[in-house]
Length: 363
Ligand SMILES: Nc1ncnc2c1ncn2[C@@H]1O[C@H](COP(=O)(O)OP(=O)(O)OP(=O)(O)O)[C@@H](O)[C@H]1O
Image (cartoon, rainbow, N blue to C red; front, top):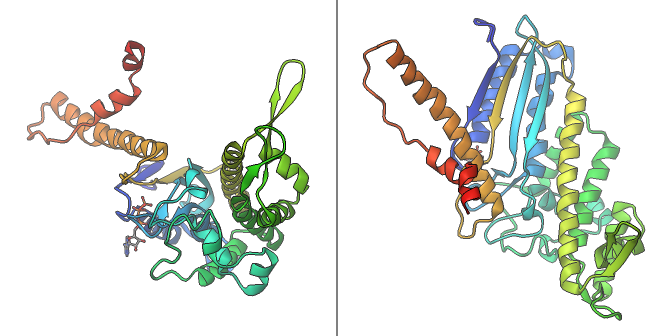
């Protein structure tokens, strides 16, 4: 970057568990060291970027079959530099957090780390949020895996809080974040039974009513309004709004949809908050971007998320093929350089199968 005066991008690629996130962290440490400022200058951009890792991992990583700390989102970190090559700002962009994990788990995987951390928090926090053993929560107990070797959730909770301090998330904001996390766990424990009206639903029993009240209190909303939003659906017509009851199965689907959207918005909010605290440099001269996305994966049961993850990886692989093999070798041919052709597996047909419009119009 300094020598040629051109911004750079680093694509870290590989299957799930290959070591992308760990390599990215080393890359970031190296760049922070090379372009960093003296520690005496206080909380620096690079320090904040490095400390954003534990925060993002707490909310965006989970144990999967392949990796105990698997990133369930894509991340592009843009380090901005001034003309002297010092880091002057940074931006973190994230992509496609795996939402289904919030309410659906398969053995032996876990939900996002933050849920277990909060259950293992100091007793005053656990009491405040009415949490406790993760085995008591539907969003966590669909899998038998609650602990991860070498990971102490109570320590991680404190470390995450500390990292949040460093990236500029205030103590009030931290409380609000964990309130939402706890609310989602209570939301998941609301079960529904048939209501009095035909095809209607209501919280199944006192336990479900307790969790509904807790979720509403933590979300800071009216519990009746929360119940209505779960058990009813409002359909807007041109002239009026029609309220329709939902049966117990539909109410449970509605509950899960709410949990997923709230969690993904919480994640986006945290990323935005980190970005505004780190600060961008609108006058930066160069940029080094580092892209770390979730790697290829294939499970016993693969959902739409795996389809999107694998397609993204195929597209990046094609970009790599294009630049490293195809364009380079075309240039050799053009310049009549004598070289032996390097064989590579071209995955263009995989991309064509999914992206080429012709296939769909033919169908
Ligand atoms: N350089 C390294 N030194 C020590 N351990 C490593 C290193 N790289 C990877 N590991 C180990 O491998 C695990 C998986 O690495 P990492 O989380 O970086 O994979 P990944 O490619 O980012 O996977 P995913 O796509 O699932 O996020 C880490 O939790 C760590 O235990």
